[in-house]
Length: 143
Image (spheres, helix red, strand yellow):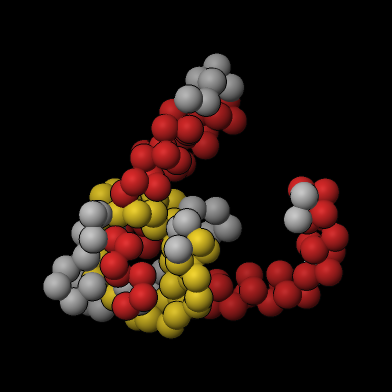
């Protein structure tokens, strides 16, 4: 499982160091793709297969399903950590997530989110401000 929030930076070769705690879960490979809320999603390979299978089973007759499939699947790229635990982020994914240099790597149980630090701070402030309203709606989802 992935949990926690870590500050990292992107080097000049677009390499991102994955937090040490997360690396052992990524030894069999991983996939990074466009996420939601202006971040990237990083899945370990077996988790990605589950997600991709579900997405591929969405009805292609639905415009929203096609759009979501394109967002998640067409933008996906397999990555492997190097000997120093780094992955390379393609330019098109950096552009999508507005990533410059400073990055937040956030563990969200079955996935990792990769955020530009400034975008993360803005998102987090908004979410923390609305925490009580968000918590109230969680009871409708069984939490």
